Image (cartoon, rainbow, N blue to C red):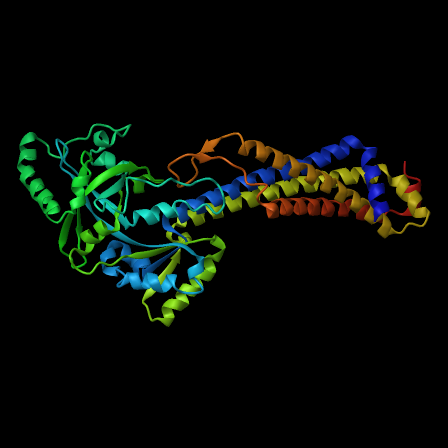
Length: 471
């Protein structure tokens, strides 16, 4: 084998320009595959990090909520949810996998702002959560992409009356000035005239009085911040109103969500949905230490609920955020297409080079055959030459890809990935994906070796006499 490699290397040097061009094609294929693969890997890691920080790895629902419960979240509340959380946390199998376990309450309703000259209402999609757990979840960064968030003082466990709204709904409700939002057009009055506005004022005052009647004393702690009224139906079907202090506006990744999103402390959401009845939650969110434990944790939770005869269901973040699954499928298909294109280019480049080598060395092949070398020896000589061209080209491409990725990662570039509202560092995850590098290298070398097989077979089948008299 050592002699075959030595001979193949010398044959490559006999026509340096042709060998260099073919090796460059292999290197370009490796470079393109690895750079795009590193970019795709970073997108996947960023999307997963974003989703896990927001909605965790797994969410426990009452059976039926995932499919039909979104229209009436109050009807699918989990009873005695502290006991369920305790059961999950104390389980010896799934407990050590959990980083954060926290309850959430989803709700639908109408938000209104009737302060000053503004009279605006908007339907909203709300979520009640525990602020300290939210801050902990937003620190998850298993893939080390640097997309973490500091604690948000606008939401706190000690102020159950203060929440956040999307930037879009803040504009619609006329909160631009108190929240100092930019790019905010003047809000049109809901009433068509001053007379109609005056006539509607007593109704608005009644709504505000109803909201303040059962308001948490913490409302008075947030002086200077705007306040909105939230109207929703309770679990029993009766209308209920609470008042929420708007601590700030936070941009969401999609306009549809941005125009409807409201986040509030869990006690305020439960007060709005359940009133004075038993407080429940629609979901129990689990954030794991490692994503690789997701399947095992889900299987254990399902078995645990069956053992305790609990009418609960478990869903992962891929089911709750189908956009993530769609992006992964799309970029995987694009990567596969690029890999196939590069493989075809390498295939024909190596076939062309090896065919030319066979034609130029026909006399040499006849001489070697006349000296007793069998057809298999001739075939191996050209196959090893094709393998060597592929190996050198793929190695050069891999080294260049790692160097370019390192430069880009340290250039300080930023971009806004899918489902994000803020810019994050732009990186190419090539060094951290050894399987990607090894797969691209092995794939291109295999293609180059297979491409050399056809010319090698042709060289091995040449008749000795015809090869010797070839001019």
